[in-house]
Image (cartoon, rainbow, N blue to C red; front, side, top):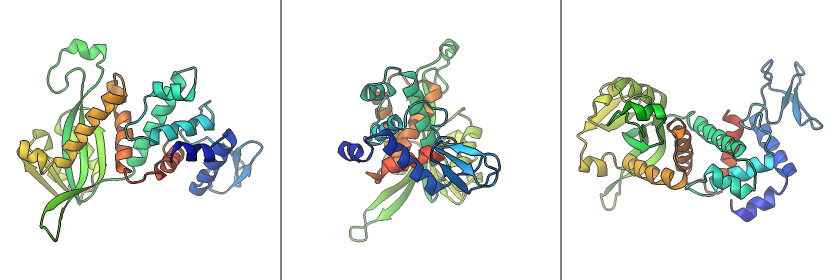
Length: 302
């Protein structure tokens, strides 16, 4: 969706609100009190009323817009800005684009959207042939981390991220040349660098019928217990450009993307920024539909 199309469709608070209601009606509303799914619409209150217990649910309730004082129009403009470019916008730039005085509500809104993106992708697990490796991302270290003086893994200013990619080898029937076709991706900030952290990530992110390719890191010793097959290769240049090509390209792109758009990312928020990066990567062919998908993630991603 380009800027002219967006303005034509969402030129007022009312049009944004009506669109949001129409999308929420498609998904359905569950009563918070009795879980009933049939409701009346009370237009004067912009709320749903449960037909069973008469409990009311506001249009924002149960979505990531819940408790927000920002208008529907501001939320819609922000979702448009976040989906109009592959690179992304900082909260400060969105504040400037929207002409809002206070930074804090914008920062909170953008992070809620990133959380919704992550929650939406968390519904799906990778399957088939999976490449997996880890990348170290530079983040702003806390004062406690700086005082620890740790080097290498766990060092201040570094966060370890597991990157996973569905990567199927396809062979051209005419030339016989093989190449990898990528499906969906996942990125998970690891709380620790030991095998148990990797094991948990594997169980949460990859189906147990999958085939996983990694290097020979000692953190990966238990992966075979959670998937169909686990193949390992020594970490070298050849492995990087062939067996683990997709994840290394993704790690490189993410490392260029995040520092180029966001100033001093704190470690505790890195996962949110990765959520946005991977959400767009997984929907790289959606084009104009990406905005519509984010509206749905807004409704279902709390």
